[in-house]
Image 1 (cartoon, rainbow, N blue to C red):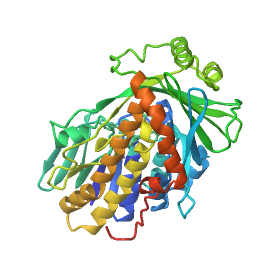
Image 2 (tube, helix red, strand yellow; image 1 turned 135 degrees about the horizontal axis):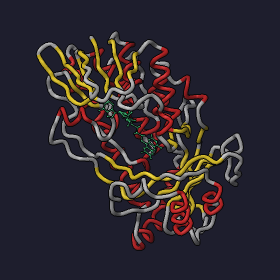
Image 3 (cartoon, protein in one colour; image 1 turned 90 degrees about the vertical axis):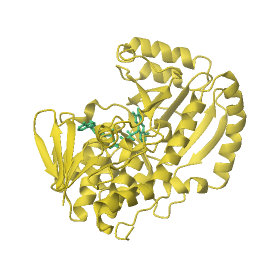
Length: 398
Ligand SMILES: Cc1cc2nc3c(=O)[nH]c(=O)nc-3n(C[C@H](O)[C@H](O)[C@H](O)COP(=O)(O)OP(=O)(O)OC[C@H]3O[C@@H](n4cnc5c(N)ncnc54)[C@H](O)[C@@H]3O)c2cc1C
C-alpha cells in the first residue's frame, strides 16, 4: 500500500514513520520550501506526545532538544501564588514534558523520517485530489501529480484535505488572545529549576521559565477579543509590541518589564485559532482522512496540539494494520480519537477565555483558580493523567 501524506509539520513525518512499521510505503509532501526556522514560538511538548513517539522508537532526537518542565506554578498580578500543577508527575515511566522551539520539533521529525528512508518533498503544495476505484491522485501547485492508495491530510488547521473531504467543513474559530514570546540567553529569573511560572496579570497573561544554560523562555498572551484584520499583526513593529506589552503589564509584580526589555527582537505576534468539531474526518471510501490540527485544532493554551497530532499519527497506523480495509481503519481511528481530542479542544478554549477575561470574569477567575489549583496539587496530578498519562503500546491490536 502507498500513502500520500500532505503536510510535513508534526503529524506528517511521524505518520510516515508509523506507517512504515506496518508495511505501508509513505511519501510526505510539504508546501513550504525546506527550512522550518520561520515557524517562531516555543511549544510545550507533553509526556503523552513523547510516549506516542517512543511507541515507534522515534523519541530519541527530542531528548536533546529544549528543556524539561516538571511543574507549572501560577501567580496572580500581585505575584501571590495561586497553585502549582505537576506535569506528568505520576507517569511510572518517568516521561515528562519539554519546552522546545516549534521549528526544532518540525526539523527533528522531518530529519528522523528521512533517516528512516521516508521521502519528504518540500515546495509541494496540494491543490486538488481525485479519488477513483483504484486509488487517489494528488495534484500540486507546481503541476506535478502523485498517485497512491490513500491520502492523509496532516496539513494543519487550514487543511486543504479537510475541504476536499467536505467542501462545507466549518472554518477555524478565532481564539481571543494573541501570542508573542521567545528565548533570552544569559537572563536570570528567580524560579525553581524546571518550573514554568505563569502569571494571570491584571490585564495580560505572562509566563517565564529559567533554562539550565542560564537563559529564559517567555511568552505573553495579550487579550484581543476581536480578530485582528489581515496585515495588522504583521505590520506591528518591534517597538510597538514592546510598548503594548509594557502597557499591559504595568502594575503587575514580577519580572515582566525586564523580560520585555531584554527580549530578543524583532518581536512578532500571532493570532491563533481552534477547531472544535470537524464533522467528517474521512471521505467514507477509505481513500482520504485527516489527522492532527486538520481534524481537531486546540488553542495553544492547552499545550497539547503537537502531542495530539502525534498520538493521531501513531494510532492511525495501528488502525490501518489491524482492520481489513482502509474504510474500516479510518472509521476505527475516528472512533478512538474523536472524544479525546474534542475534550482537549474544549479545555484549551476554556483556558484561553480565562486569559482574556474582562473585569467581572477576572474577579470570578481569581476566586476560583486557587480552589482549582489546590485540588489539582492535592491529588499530585492524578486528575491530569487522562491527558498526560496516555500510553500507546504499538504492538497491541487496537
Ligand atoms: C503560537 C502557537 C503556540 C503553540 N503552542 C503549542 C504548545 O505549547 N504545545 C503544543 O502541543 N502545541 C502548540 N501549538 C499547536 C501546535 O503547533 C500544533 O497543534 C501542531 O503543530 C499540529 O501539528 P500538525 O502536523 O497537525 O499541523 P502543522 O504543524 O500545522 O503542520 C501542517 C503542515 O502542513 C503544511 N501544509 C499546509 N497546507 C498544505 C498543502 N496544501 N500542501 C502541502 N502542505 C501543506 C504546512 O506548511 C505545515 O508544515 C501552538 C501553535 C501556535 C500557533
